[in-house]
Image 1: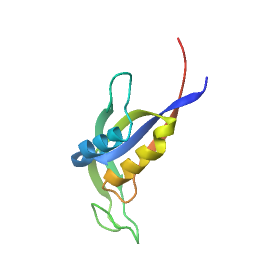
Image 2: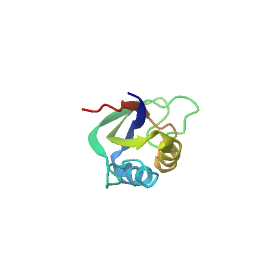
Image 3: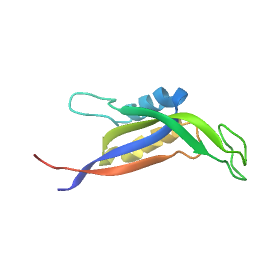
Length: 109
């Protein structure tokens, strides 16, 4: 077993979710068989408090903020990670993008 594919999880304000999904899909994320731009999303609430020196997209320095967000999940090839992360950063409105990358093992059943 070895890692060829990765799962990217990113948290984005609901009103920017389509923009981010399209950008990372155009960069190659979400390719699955004969399909492209495949993703899964679930909605939730993100919380953060901007500190001194921050330039928050939403909220105020020193004040806890809550934002309706989507958790977007996509699968991608390891070789696509650089391009997909670049597209993510360019399309996401936050100065600090919250994302996670998980290795997916190739397991034949």
